[in-house]
Each structure stands twice: as C-alpha cells, then as structure tokens.
Length: 280
Image (cartoon, rainbow, N blue to C red; front, side, top):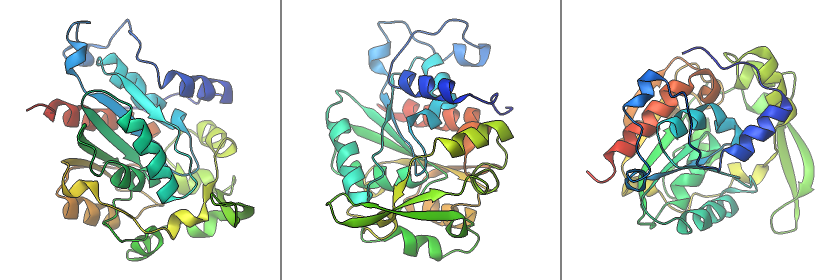
C-alpha cells in the first residue's frame, strides 16, 4: 500500500483528536467489508488501545486508526506522557483499568516498552501488538538493550535540553534534530509529512533510557510483532531477538521506523489478527 498523502499540522492535530472517537465510517473499502459489524455485534469486538512512541503524539497512529475504525473497532489512542518508563506505564495502566471488556494493546517504538510494563496483571488485556518496538524483559534498561545490537542512528541525531524531571528534579528532554528526523526516523515517508512530524515532535525524558522495566506482560499475554527491516532507530536484529524471546507471531515489513505511516495496512492487519484471536 502506498504511503498516505502528506498531512498539514492542522490535519495532524485534528486526526489526533479523532483517534479517541469510535465513529461509523461510510464508503468502506471492499477489503475491509468482511470485518465490519452491525451495532449489535460491535460489543463482541475488543477495544483497541494504541500507545505512541517517543517524539510523537497520538495522531501518529492516524493512518492505522482509520483502517481499524473501518473494520468496526473501537479505538483509543493514548496520550503517552513521555516522562519516563515508570511514569508512562502507570498512566497507561490507569487508562486500561478504566475500559470495560477485552482489550488489544498495541505499542510503537518506545510505546512497546510502556505497554510491556503497563499491561502486567490486567486481566482485560488479551493481546499485545508491538510495531517496530522495544520489548524489554523485567529488569532490563532500554539504553542497554539497544546497545546489544549495532545499527541505530538515533543517538547522534538527538539534542538534549535541560527540563524538569517527573519528580521535580533537574532532568533532560530529548528531541531528534529537525534536519536529521526524516533520514533517521521516516526515510520512506513523504518528505513533507516527515518535516511536519519533525516540527510537532514531543520531547522524551532522557530517564526513559535508564529506567528499569518493572514487569514483562508478554510473559503471560500472547503477542504479535511487526519488525521493520529498514529501521534506523531500533535495529532490526534487536526487533527479531525480542520477538523470538517473547514468542510473538511475527511479520517483517521493509519499512523505516515509522511503519505507521509508510505501511499502515500491514500494521492494521496485524492488529486485526490479534483482535480476532480474542475469545478463541
């Protein structure tokens, strides 16, 4: 599937707001028609909760959300605080416990580490989906995990700015340099879209790379994993190692780190596969 058209900043913000609304969609494509439901059947479908990664917001899932809503799913795209793994997981956990019924929980990039910690011990989370993501085990540190495999171009592209930490102490916020964002993060996304995403990126607390993962939900919850084979942020070999260790059902896509934009069909298909497994 070709990449979506470049989106203006106004459209990105609007899409982010739409991400948390379950809407009826007309003009459903033929390939999605078999997955649609009537209003009476929709209650049987799990709620899909999406967690974005670093340097992004909930609208990063917009191309995927459109496809999931067309298939009849209720979707919530969570505003990941990006204030550190412990803080972020606690927030996502609070969102999960507010949802009634089964949940399929998906995380992109750093969001994978967040869902791994947040879902532990929550019975309504029935499936985990990782998209070009970190999938740490309990006790692991993302910075150390990433260093096990060469190939990431993220570190030299980062800019650090002093900022208050979650506990009020002095911390550091990390950004990707605007001029390096397209080549490192989104090399197969239309240039105008990549530039817009660079300009609206949200900072990540540097503590996210030094926090210890408090739990590993994939040890008790079935998982699916999309490996981006052209990823320059999380090396593909690290993605494969994590997927194998977690026993994930895995697909590989020739994508940059931002498969949400360059291959939204493949991402949404994997999430739907996980959703179809719920209740079986």
